[in-house]
Picture 1: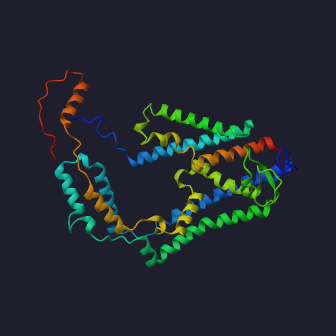
Picture 2: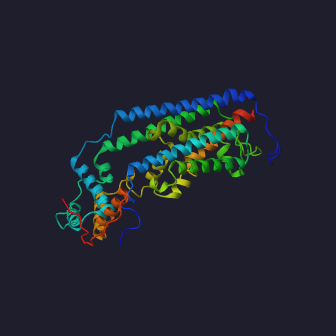
Picture 3: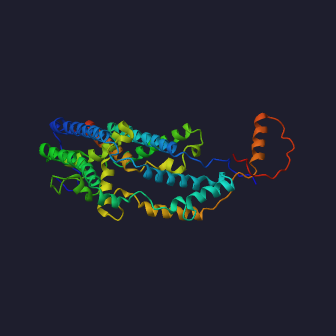
Length: 278
Length: 110
């Protein structure tokens, strides 16, 4: 066989019938089982924490501040000032209080349950994966199973021909172990078609673990609430208030005239941009 | 000084935006799946297969715009995310490659 890869291998049909088909089906079914087990596990243990009204209140305050930042142009001047005072007035403002919510770091230190939960979740993802890998390498190791239908550079050899050490083999042939990995990642999209947002995402989990190992941020990626309060306060202080409903009455009248199909009447040039506030 | 754009045209509901993104994602993934299967069954090999992938996704973009009534700004915040957002994403590309490979192997190789 030449290393140019011009010569094609003849693969036995039995390899397809006894390796390719059963391997595909078994991996698909195992992924299905894992999906359902995870769903059951998650639904039996919703959120896990104790409901704390103060923490909930703080989250709502953050959400309201965000909303105010986004849509302040539609509030009248006094209404805007009142809201801003509620958030950032000295001593009494909501963002000057010390946040009740603990940072994720503190939670980890003080509450061993959080740690156990996280461990369980990680293991729950890891164990089936190891089991499947073991299953594949036990029953189907060492087969050359098929061919990728497009050319690749030789550097993909490690990725595609895991378990078979033949440097003269054309790169596009792949082995059973690599096929398993390809299925593991490639079927993700298909599962998302079926289960929509409930899908257990393999690669996302891996990325999360990676980020955790890197460990600049706190675990779970949640920012420190005290810092978040501070940042929100500064953002509100810098907020530039601009009234957006200037001349809204004339605009509304023009739109209504247009809708009614009548001639626009003579408009009295009034200058009262403020709506009546309730 | 009337504003150029109608009032409230820059408001987007986050839930609706997410829903729209989900719909697009669903379309892209299923499009990749069907494209991969058909390309594999037809026996296409080489880089031409990716041309089919591009064609299918261009078709999907066109259909979405048609469905949105030539005014996708009403449903999506940015045009580029509608056209390119999921085309080069890991999920849809991997789905395409996987189904291409599998159907090609099942039908042609052995």
